[in-house]
Image (cartoon, rainbow, N blue to C red; front, side, top):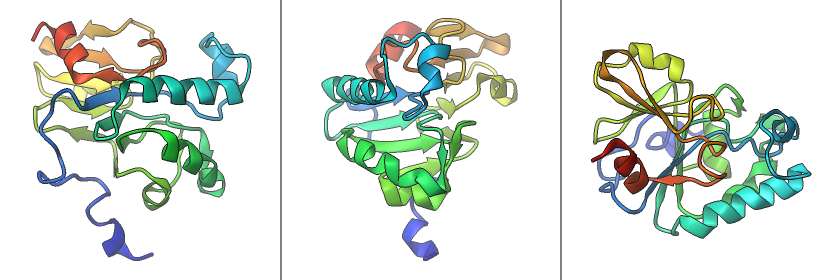
Amino acid sequence: MNKNKYQNHIDRITEKELKEFGENTFFTSDLHFFHENIIKYCDRPWSSVDKMNKGLIQNWNDIVPEDADVYITGDLGMMGNDKAGRLTPILNKLKGRKHLIYGNHDRISHSKYIDIGIFSVHYPYLQLSNGWICLHDPALATACPKNSVIISGHVHNLYGKFTKASKGKTIIDVGVDSWDYKPVSMKEINNLLGV
């Protein structure tokens, strides 16, 4: 593997690459592409994986512009390196520049994610320039500073779109099961926070 190829994409985003936040910044989580059982587990409105994959792509592209940055806080798909190629056509169809924060079902290597179309890969979290902390499992919020805004997934609408946690922390669940199977814009999150 040529490490220089991945140097600017794995575990960090340079300030130059990190665009000014605004209308073109979106967040999502728990898409679970190709995960048939998630339809049953989360009572998703599709009868097959193929229909779910197509529906998630359509929903994404209906609201995300081509020049957007989309932060995926985990569980993009449920597969390892041997099946990573299955995600390539999906990632090619999804608009925007995609940044992945690893979730418990993301089993593809960092470099393979870059090869198949993810712009940057992060583990276990990514702190954005506005101070928000993106991570997968909100249980990790216990390690975040007080008064943090934590953007997460993992819980599949367990507590709704957001919850207050100890020490003034606010946890926003950006999982598709909480947001009608669509990414959520930074503007919508700011409205939720009353900013």
